[in-house]
Length: 267
Image (cartoon, rainbow, N blue to C red; front, side):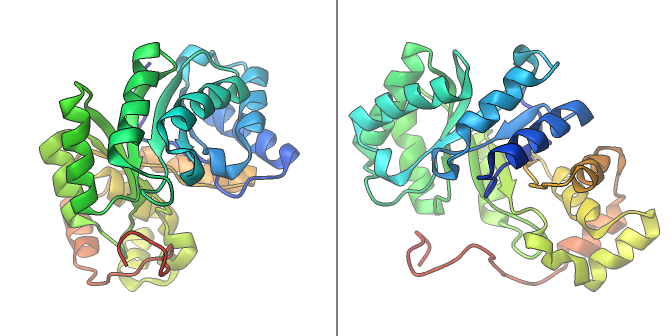
């Protein structure tokens, strides 16, 4: 099925009822790309929502991520099959390596993903939270196995613009999927974003999402739990920034991560 650039994130949705309701609401509003992960402990809840929804499974792009404990060859194969079972799907549209940490080994991990793709349990291979150096190594490893990288998921928003990784996505022709696309609310008080929001009678969240969607090869997966916020975020699809708006936000000179720590690959 087609990849939808405007996805719905489910990070921290560990309450069954909250997760099912949120995903069902998102699908009802119009989202057609749902993002989860083994580490979120909610794949089964996402699967229930997919099963409950009136939207055909064939119309929804489903993505998940391998936990860092599951990156050895045998674990990649076994746990991806388990994820598909929990999600209630024959095929996971996109499976990421969530973090290049712990049991990550380029040879074993990428070989496992290649095998599970050949088996038909996943359609596409993705990576997440890779540095440019690790990304290049992994892309070469996938290409050697006859597999193209489909997406690289990283934190990306106006306060962390990821120019190098966005450039790499354009050159390699894969998607950069932006998580925490509104910097967990920190964009709300940025003067440039507020100014553009007032100009368009939009919210700062919508402006941040629209700025990302104005970039080539970029997709977004905002997370929201309440119907009002889920609907507000989706209103971004009707917001088109002009060149002046985009340049104003491009000019925000910050390098601020909301997901960081001494355990991360970039430290």
